[in-house]
Amino acid sequence: QVQLVESGGGLVQTGGSLRLSCVSSGTSGRIAGINPMSWYRRAPGKERELVAGIAGLSTTNYADSVKGRFTISRDSARNMNTVYLQMNSLKPEDTGIYYCRSYYRGREYWGQGTQVTVSA
Image (cartoon, rainbow, N blue to C red; front, top):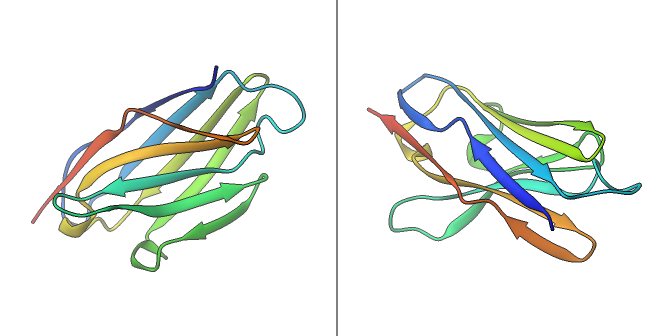
């Protein structure tokens, strides 16, 4: 069973930085550590949206609103797979609950979310 645990959220002022982590356990085999993973966020009153994704070791994609400010990366080890989201130059519109998503062996898995609040 794949489990995702996010951490690193918090309250930060505009222009500040946060680093989110998502630890994935329960994967194995050749694709463990390179399966597609991504960060989504749900802002208050809005639909959940893709923020950044990574496939393989370094193929990444970003929402236009975060390009140049956010960086997704991963650190793969035996049976563990951690994905990070480095968020710089944060803006109030980045406020929301950030969720980690993993796509593994034809199924998707979600973490419980971590709150990010950016004050003006």
